[in-house]
Image (cartoon, rainbow, N blue to C red):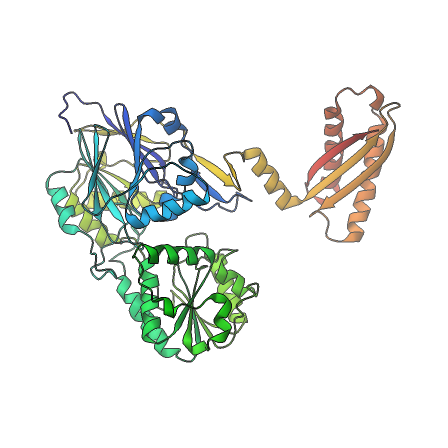
Length: 558
């Protein structure tokens, strides 16, 4: 790193992860160089029908692609790496992260057939230089996935400390305690700017240790010795999986894995040594019928009630290899992500209908959050003592509460910025302020398409989902302009056959009258005729049913 005089401002550009939980992506820019931290996805909300994933809009980065020196990753959760297969197609730069994180990224790139990306494994306390302005040190933290890092980014103006997702767990399963010593050393040398996660900022105290979850599992296994046990959890939580496997081994139970992502991550984590699993314990899901209930644990996806997940299909009776019953105990080892509560409780209700015993977080200590609560956040603030602060990784309420906590610890409001997606924060050695916003938002992934589903398509999908579809096919003789037929089809509009037939006949009569007033022989552009058809049918439907279906006129010339 060189010494600089009369430096430019350091720019922090937020392309995701503020004002929301998910889609994390932040760019750090100094003069002619940019580095990126994380590139995540988020799940589509109910107002995005048919969308598979939502990723950050990188218009700003593509406009400055020659400046981008690399992407550094804090950890391997979807909301931090899920966007990479799509982004790297247009922005092929080196990627840096832990061994597990990059193994997960590599699997995603292979699945999407993205080739030629340089993936660089960095160990804890290791560092990389990106260009002439940025040096990034990777600092070990505890989280709900192995290989999680905070980042100490050295720039010409000073050090930026990015906590990533973290918690302070003094009894982690792998023994790798958060490196508070190194964090303290970084803070003692002076930190210009800190970005810290805000997910659990509304929770007082400290988060539950992951080891406590293992103790709860042991207790539940003891109480259910003659029953088959299911445990639903996040596939990426390797430490949780390790605890389940260890308890199962102690109780001499076989282990089966259900759900594609669960099977894939177990295989990957075992291959790279992050998960210790005796192959003799594993039974194929197709062969579980040969194992007595008391000798089996099934670890499955679906802790968030995802419609296509293994647990949801099991609860709905749609998983042909597993039938749930009265001798089954199902443990849901996760907290519903905000917005998923209804889906999770639907799964729980369906499991109860099959006679299963269900254990979930509100009843037992069977889930530990991977995110810091207030006391842990205070500890990091006190160790880092940043000159300036930007809360991240949270909805606006989380960011606001985090800013208030920082002020209670002595920071001034003038030292804190609350950012939005698209915000460009400009930092110097003596000041911090909001600059001009950059192009931002989100790209929608639908199948193989990225960004090709716009507002008009979504509007039509919502329209279809709410009011149904009405297709009017009109046959016209192109020589004399006579209408020789009107055929009408509806979907999702009328409830009964009798109602449907009645409104269809009325619609035909309305169209016959409307078309009789038009000289179809002289029509040069059928667009005006189609608009007339839409208008007449819309008026009829609103008058008769108070509904407004999507109307598609089709003109067939003969």
